[in-house]
Image (spheres, rainbow, N blue to C red):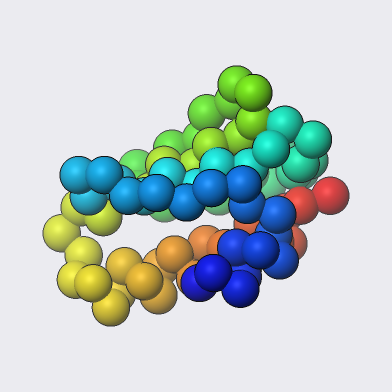
Length: 84
């Protein structure tokens, strides 16, 4: 997870109350159309916000630890593809 996070240029990764926060620096660019499509396809599990950078909030909501880790790894793979 850490290696893939470095490859996609993640600034920070934290977890609080069943939500994982993936933060990227403001200079990191993404294909915004595909980014929103990814968030919409997640059944509300992924929220995206913009501020000083892009933040993905990923909600665990009933997923077992292994399944959630797999979901995060797949998400980081998708994010890697979306990065410009």
